[in-house]
Image 1: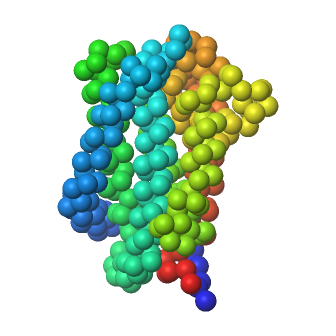
Image 2: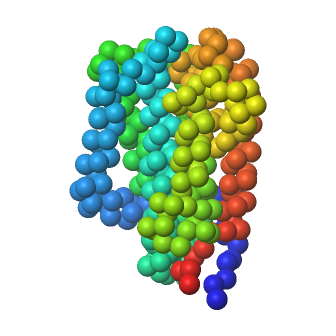
Length: 276
């Protein structure tokens, strides 16, 4: 019989001191070294965003309302967070749990929050690196345009990374093996991606469906990115800096709400021992 012990996640780590930070960084450095030894993963981390940039002419992103450069970067943020950050963290947590690595780490000096954050660092760094590569590729192609506001997409990226972390941790509660993550991750991957406005504008959906879609986990990340980078609302209306921030109130609140919900679910459901 497997017992589940409440987990202390970053939101509860209010008394972090130098010792805790050093331990977390030490674990993070070890995880990064392990990642760098995996040449396939390193090569894919560079090639995949470059391939995305290279397919810009074929994809025809942007349409008549949003320039190609901003729309491609918005797409890169959304796709990378959900397909790389969330999925990789879920499979990593589950595989480390089944190999008893989490259990061994938990018995040492590291706190639960330090273990989770330390393991997540390589994936979060790769996420930021891939988006930076896409941004550089857009500039090289001459498709770069000045954003309406740089803070909103940064908030979307940082908040989105934190959200994917806690959602991945929460998903370990019903993911038995790393292989089964392909099934358990599908609802978030398919539903959130399909209804977040990346590939089908929310304005093209029925009003009731669009309203519901705005409260899915990935949608506020896409909305904030699009407001800051392209100056466009979810309805497709053009806005300036002031308009972007006034429109951002709802997606910021939704993102904050999901962070709270995800953290609570992760603390209650994260499993440190193998499921039997």
